[in-house]
Image (tube, rainbow over all chains, first blue to last red; front, side, top):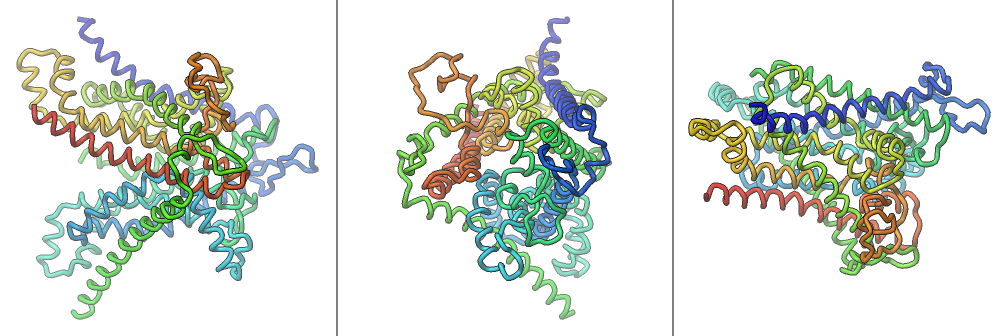
Length: 291
Length: 295
């Protein structure tokens, strides 16, 4: 009888690899991430300092991560603000308005969008967007073109298919009866969308936006290529800023000692941010799995 | 009443405008790469060695991309499909199932650069291997396993319960039922999932920076079949800069007289590859579906 259970045990073993991977990942990132405090004795509160002076050879070495955390949040939020109206609009178009032929164009187009690798977005930003901002909006303060806005615009494009496809699923999941009931009461299509479809799909759209934020916070190379990588608290869309991911990308291969430990702490902060998003998505989706 | 009708027409116009705008942006991106690439592109570009003084080619890094793809999928597919079978056929409601699902969600949300850091800590530093293709492939496996697991589970769940009931009623065991009744029907979906996952390997760069390495490859000698020789292009224990990493690296260093041309053409090659995988997965899934239902 035990022999018959072998397939069950083998397939379970394969599924358990995912848990093992998470445990190892959490273990390694947390362990390396706390070295800064445990081994080098940097006070935990120091990472909240706005000063990033990691070079051990210079005066007043300070490992303040605030510029990176603030930069990550700033770039992410502006990307979502730009992307959400476009993505949700496109999803509404595909679900509610588009004739069949238009949907046949829009759906594969979204798949193409998803398929474009992030380095390609970064390269596009670097060769087109950055010079464009410098040449045409230099008078607004875009001295080099490398800026908070450039990073956010590249990210807005990258998270567009994510938000679109998840909100589209949410709109399609709204029962057709609800639309019919609204239309039968004499409402226009827009009134039905605004007062019936959007409220019914609100949680799904919120989930879509959080997925977009998650992707925006974690994207590394595309952002690093256009953002200018200046470790300052973001104050102007036109100025260079930096993010956790950019700084890890830039410094990891050269930085040693305490400087290197600070980069692992940045990785730990990123991990905590994504953990928060996972919990937020779970919370938004609560009760829906039973339905 | 007129205001309501006007609002409806305005909203419709805005939604159309948004859709047209987004599609135009996409068309412009693709057109940009095609137009920029055509004047300098030749088939030799795909096979030649990179060069700092002339256009050269992407032969070694393209080879590395294909190599990493095969190696990653060799590691990911068995685990992903078997795990998918467990989640669809055996898993009940409970703590263990919840833990697996939460792990899947967490890895899917962790930034790829953090997965890369983890890969560095485990497969580069702790193992003492240094930067290797195998370390990169294992890192990408961690990254892709949850996705393939989910896609396989979904494909297997779509198999109608009748198929299982009929097989079990004939006296087949649970595993015989899975093996001979469920899997053959689920194969098209599973294959689509595998190809979609493979497409991600081509585009990924951040997770590979600190695992498969960044060194510019020298000329490869394909007659060197020694799998343990770090000079052999067949060896998993060697540096393996992929095409995606190459694009990022050549731009951040800015070396070479033709960085611009090479980056444009490399981007086009990358887009075409990933597109081929996406369209290929759909075509293959459809073809297999017809084959299965034709039985």
